Length: 586
Ligand code: FEO
Ligand code: CA
Ligand code: CA
Ligand code: CA
Image (cartoon, rainbow, N blue to C red; front, side):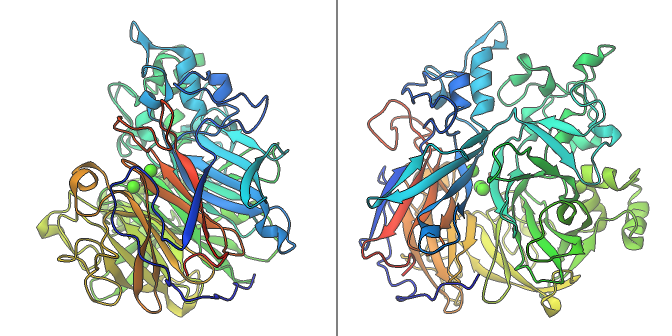
């Protein structure tokens, strides 16, 4: 659709100072409210939220999950103004805080986790689909037919080149075509055909393999001692150790069912989520499509958020046609990885077993792949072999609707040595992170060359570089950029995920959201979150008059319980509006 004309001055609001309040701070021209906190009932029998961690696992399966992250608003009607008044808010839930989830934290007896606690923890992961409606000047949850929880246990299909591969066979799916659940969903994407994509990031540690780990476990960090939450003590599928002769317990391939992009149709509550394996397996942080051009292939850009991992592009084999639905557009195509040259050019390297350059690089590295599915299961290894540029932890990508430039946050990298810097990752170590951007040659989604530059370097007034080439100021200093989103007006929303001492005692205050106007280079702090939280996930209604922002893991170190007045803290969605009803960001 045509972007709305930006009425009002871009970045006309009063910048918010850094803050250490245990509350949301927005500009004085704006208001906020809180909706959809963890545990709010949204489907089934609508079990009421019980403070103190008292809900059961069955309750959690019908309530909003924990640790909100990537989020999209799908209008339920095309007719203005209703398309900005009724819609499906779809968000994912990255991980859990066991201290907040249970009355007195995690319980184990004789080394075995409490079974209902594990059920609850698995249920608090995944995705929430919720119908919301604007009425009487506020947003309310509708108990409608679309509402749904997808969890770490929901049955899913596996599609694309890896479907049915020998390395996917498990006791649950002897033919390697089905699986259960999606885990550690960080950031998200959405397709031109209005489906939601959730991205499996730090899934590896949920599984344990106490034997000899194959490369598709070891390269991703499948645990060797015990799983992240000890789920393997209750559910065999989280133990990928070779099982001996008992085939009913053989889950050595279960970790290979994770690390994918998962497509969900929010408009069909009975639909089965699908893992799209052609888009590669890594710590998927999110994905963003280039602006779809009818008659051209579709391109999706994706980051692998781990130190010195890579940025990827998937290009569909089939051409995009408006009205076309999912299917093979995401199942057939070429996966590329980025190499950034120091001269400001870059190239996309195909990870394709039929590509002569890739075959030669693999041979030179002494690495062999049995087939393209093996390449995809071992995407990181394939990218190593191809010679990709190790990045400072690629998080979200965003595409400028005005220029087509693709932006990526590189959140930080404590492990880059001073002797390991390059032009695209110029600081070693890199405590503050930066934002890089690139433009495909000839504007083509399937280009194999691009040109890049650095949009900004985060940091204090003394060691940052703003979009205009000047240092950041008191109105814009920040660190560890993570969430990133362009609205249709061309304003770039930047969210931070500082942690440790940078968050606890650094000069930047709590985590925050800024907004930049790339055309002018202006940048201002728009929102600061409560203590301990990460600010992640941002979207507006189509009219740009309501902004939704997620607050993740508030009060995680204890001593407070945002949003307040209760025993346990709750991740939640914040609704921000301009007091005069104007467009957000002005
Ligand atoms: Fe879950 Fe990379 O943030
Ligand atoms: Ca997060
Ligand atoms: Ca993130
Ligand atoms: Ca992060």
